[in-house]
Amino acid sequence: MVEETSKDADSVAPTPAPEDIISAFDMTAFLGGSDDMETCKRMAATMAATGVIVIKDPRVSVDDNAGFTALMQSYYSQSVEELMKDARPDAHYQVGVTPEHVECAKCAKDPECLAKIDAMPEDRRPHRPTTADPKWRFFHRVGERPAESKFPEQNLEPVMPEAFPEWNTTMDAWGAKMLTALEAASEMLALGLELDRTALREMMHCGPHLLAPTGSDLSKYNETGTIFAGYHTDLNFLTIHGKSNFPGLYIWLRDGSKMAVKVPPGCLLIQAGQQMEYITGGYIKAGFHEVVIDDSCRSKAKEVQESGGCLWRISSTMFGTVNSDLTLAPMGRFKSLPGAEAGYPPILAGQQVLNELMSIGMAQDRE
Image (cartoon, rainbow, N blue to C red; front, side, top):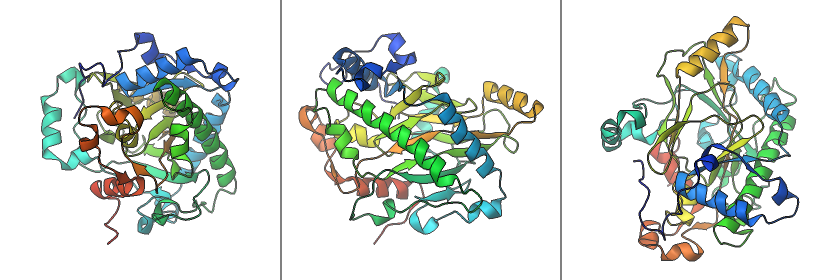
């Protein structure tokens, strides 16, 4: 499941300097009008070699993330009955709330994947998912919608919970900041990948982007090793995370090494999804990750509990996705990579999303 770094210089960028893996790429100069090609190239090389980058966007503040997190903690603290009013299973849970024990990592259903996990070196091994995740999630649509789409269920209007009149204002504001940061980063990545500056951004125009905060109840689930999000890759284009209020996110780099994620305050983490892998013909790989209760998470939970704080772990996550009606296929110079066209045959982005949703039990075939 974890892809090893290729030895072919034409298929994978050189391994970046260690500081580029753990330090943020500051986008201030780029946003000020400079193409800053050196940073763009390092950013693209880091994404290709690791599947992940950390960025600093001066337009996104710590206070923005804190206000959003506080709203989500209040929301998930409601009763199950109240939360379920916002569930839309008929729309594959693609708007509104998804209850705990619905999302399930594909690995949990795949004996071959589980066997590969068991065979990994202990220091690189993910936790072994065998059941659906005990987390809640809320999906809130972000950005402009297409006038028409072959996939209307992927482009529905947001759900607004009754008890939170400020809901849309807060969600739209945070979602817009995450999306603008992602769009700027996509332009820098495009330049670093020797594509037209707007090539990646244009693919996301009118995409079914989702602000997708999870809620994991640490007062209910508190044992070390509990899996909140089983080992998986994301089905979308680029996933962007603000800093979570509790630790527990782990990622796997391109060389198979495992890292605990520590996003610096005021910074954002971006991880490649399956659609990015698709359009680069595997030059950039979708990044594996999991969320679990580890010792640091338990320690933080104990501190919060002793101070009388809220024990809901919130992930500040947004999924940036290619427009549902665009075709995914290797683009530009990536078409010529060995095995690219055969390994990534053309498919509508909306169909790719639907296929993945069916594979994890969140959707049924439309036919």
